[in-house]
Amino acid sequence: MTDMPDKLTGLRPFYAMEINALANREEAAGRSVMHLEVGEPGAPPAPAVRAAVAAALDEPQRYTHFAGQVELRRELAAYYRTQHGVEVDPDSIVATMGSSSGFILAFLGGFAPGARIAVTRPGYPAYLNTLDGLGMTAVEIPLTAASGWRLSGEDIERAYRAEPFDGLLFASPANPTGAAVTREALAEIVETCRRLGVRLISDEIYHGLDYRGPSVSALEFGDDAIVINSFSKYYCMTGWRIGWMVLPEAVLRRTQILQQNLFISAPTLSQIAARVALGERNYSEAQKAQYASNRHLVGQWLERQSLGDGQAPDGAFYAYIDMSRYTNDALGFCQAMVREAGVATTPGIDFDRVNGNRFVRLSFAGTGAAVEEGLERIAGFLKGR
Image 1 (tube, rainbow, N blue to C red):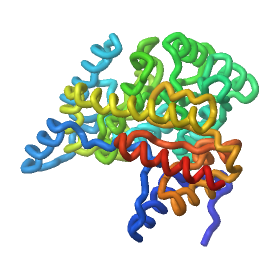
Image 2 (cartoon, rainbow, N blue to C red):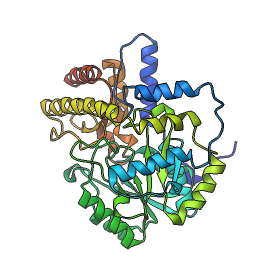
Image 3 (spheres, rainbow, N blue to C red):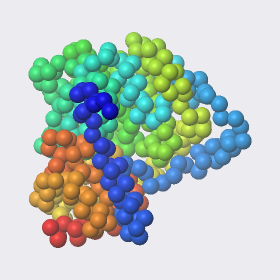
Image 4 (cartoon, one colour):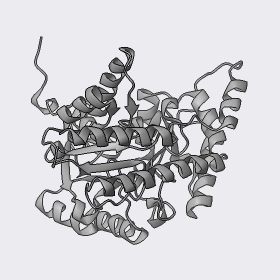
């Protein structure tokens, strides 16, 4: 067997899914496990979404236009007009197989082979693994709890001067920290990238799940960023694998051609579901209210446990917790928590390969009862350490 090239050896497992597999094995053996490891809403999509899909099942499910059904793209353009006050051409939108294929298309469509892309640390692990798998180089910009895990224009400028890069992939709200920047801070990030000649990829998949004000899109400050979004989180559609991109003119045709060849089109049934979901925001807001309640529970729990500053995250449905009082081996710690306490969480090494060994991320996307029970079990687990 031929060894893999050195440039591919940076691939790491997705530890959230490794812990999920361990938790599933424990459950199969008869154990009770609270799932706080994956960022997956506990509720199904809105009833109207499910009804629309059921009604479409008797029809042939053929490929759609490679960029997605024109009806969906028009609805997405209307979404940007309503939610963000900007005009988006439906022809600049590509419906994708979740945000995951969106990242691949953004990297390949927006950059030359071997490009250098900056990402924040801690950050979503698929960023690094996808870049590595595509033969590109990640430049990490470290963030700290002292700054609320929020990126600034100054951070970008400092990192660029030390190690220039071609693009920046940035999420607000962010995974794993839930940190979200203000409108003014996002405007500064967009302008800094523009001034440095860095192409911005704005990961907006947690939009709608801001708790301190409305979500702000990079499109509100110009049309030169690549914007990626998804129906997975706010619309409770993780398994449907449906998302979208808004593309600047300079990279649109190349990205469309890549979409045709790599993915053909997003799943037809999922596109039908997505069109309906866009009109069911009241349902999504009700789910958000449950996350907000869970967020409050987590904030109170953090304060009782004297973990961090006790502050709940700005957005998304994650808490990124410094467990250095208890461990410097986050993976072993999370594995032990599954086996001993019946709670699945994600080790910080998924999000930070340098300092993540002392952090644990927990997701509060599930039901209130599951989150409350999970927190009680974690508290008992910590007492014994």
